[in-house]
Length: 638
Image (tube, rainbow, N blue to C red; front, top):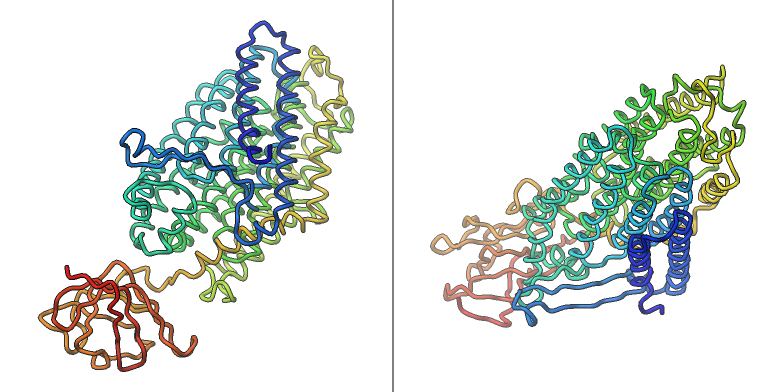
C-alpha cells in the first residue's frame, strides 16, 4: 500500500465526491455522514503518510523526496507528440506540513457545515471532497504540468461553493475570484510550456516537466538571466494573485465575505498557501537569478500588503471582512521571510503558512458559528456576546491572541523568525556569501504590522464580546437546533485547532526540523546567484569570466570575440595567450580568485583555436596569471 499511498490519498476524496453526487437517493444526513467518513479516512491516510515520511528521514536529509510514485507516458512514442507526461507524486519537508494542515482542516470544515448548509447538500459535500483531493494533489505533485493541473482545478469547486451557497453578492464574488485567478494562470501556463520546451535539451528533444529535470536547467546554464527574469514574472502572475500579494488582492475580501463558512476556512487556511508554496518550490529553485532580481520588488509589495491589509482591517465593520483583510497582511510575512535568504526567515515563512491556516481558519469558523445564530456579522448589530456565549468568547480570545502572535502560541514563533531573518538578511554567512536583499528597514516596516495587527484584532474582540449587550431583534436563531452558546459539536471542531496552536507555540522544533532539509538546497541555489551581473549578462563580475562580443584583449584576430575577466582577478589582455581566444558562448567559466582557494577553476565555454577555425571545446582552464590553456577534448569544427 505504501507504494501507492499518495495516489490513494488523493483519489479517495475524488471517488467519495463522485459517489456522494451520484447517489441521489441518499438523505441529507446520509450525505453528511458519508462525506465526513471519506474526509476522516483521507486524514488517516495523511497521518500514515507522515509515519512513512518520518521513517524515511535519512533519505529526506539527503535532499530527497519520499513516498515517490512515478507513472510516465511517453507521448512521443504513443501519439507523436514530443512530450513526456508524468503522474509523479512525492513528499518533502515543505509539502508534508501543508498536507497535514489540509487533512486537519477539511474534515473540520465539513463538520462545521452540518447546520449551516440546508440546501443542495449532495452537491455541496461532493464539491468539498473534490476540493480536498485537488489541494492534496498540489502539495504532492512532483511534475510541473501535474502541479498546474491540480492548481487550476481548485478553481472549479470553490467557484461553485461561493456562487451557489454564498451570500447576496455571491455571483459577483465567484466571478471575480475566477477571472482574477484564471487571468494570472494563463501567463503561468505560458511559462510552464516554455520551461518544458527548454527541458527538451536535456531529454533528447522531448518536452519534460519533472521537477528533478527542471531544476537542472539553471544549474547547467540552459536558462539565461533574461529568460529567468521573464519566467519568474510569468509564474509570479499566477502565484501573486493566489496569495494574494498587494495590489492583486482585491478579489479576496468579497470572496471571503460571500463564501459559506467552510469555503472561507479552506480559502484562507489552504488555498492561499498554494501561491506561497508555488513561489518556494518552483520560482526559487528553478529560476534563482530571476528570484534574486525580483526579491527587492517582492519585499516592497509584501511590506505594502502587511501595512495596507492591517489598516484596511482596522476600519471594517463586518467581522468576516476584517479577518479577510488580515490575511492580506499576514501573507506578506510569508513572502518577506521566503525572499530574505536566511534559513530562519525561510523556515519561519513555511511555519507561518501553517500557523496562519490554524488561527485564521479557526476565526472564520467562530464567525460562522456567530452568523448561524444571529445572521449578521456587522459589529454595530452584535456586541457584548461574552455574557451569553462565554465558551465562544474564550475561543475567540484564544485565536485572536494566536493571530496577533502572543508568546506561547503558534503565531509568535513564525513572526519572530520571519522578522529575524529579514533583519539579518544582508549579513553574509556560509550559504549566502553576498548576503540577502533585505535588511533592517524591511524588518522595521514589517514589525509595524504586528503592532497594527494587535490593534485591529483586539478592537474587534472588544466590540464583539464586551461592553453593552447588542443583539438583533428576536435574539438568536435556534431553528437549526443550536444553543445560545457553542454546542458540543462546535467545541469539538475548535479544540483540535487550539491544541495544535499551543503545541506549535511551545514546541515547534519537530516541524522546523522537518522543513529545514528541504529548504537548505533551495536557499543554497538562490544564495549563490551573483547579483552584480543583473545589469548585463555579458559584464564580468568579480570572480567570473564571461565571453565578450568585442576584442578587448591584445592579440584578438580579425575582430574575433575574446575572453573578458573580472577586474578583481587582475588578468590583463597581454596575459592571455594570443592563440587561445575565447568566443562568446551560452555558458560562462567560474574563475575563483586566489583568495577563494588559490587555484583557477574551469567552466564550459567554446573557444577558437590557433588556426582560427571555430571549434567546440569542452572547457577552458585558467592555470595561472599568464596562460589560458584549452582542453581540446571532443573537438568538432563548425
